[in-house]
Length: 56
Image 1 (cartoon, helix red, strand yellow):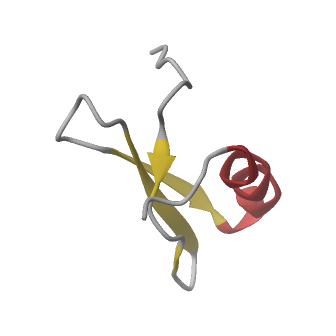
Image 2: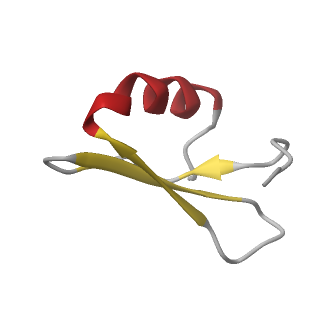
């Protein structure tokens, strides 16, 4: 799936014991996409989260 990055925002990161996640959404779409990262993928999660502003 390809999602245009312009206008995307994310919710706060939800930390869990074995994984973490955040929801990515755009102003044009009411539904968001939850991205779940396993414990070993936290470095990737941080890289993705760093380029998306937090929804306000």
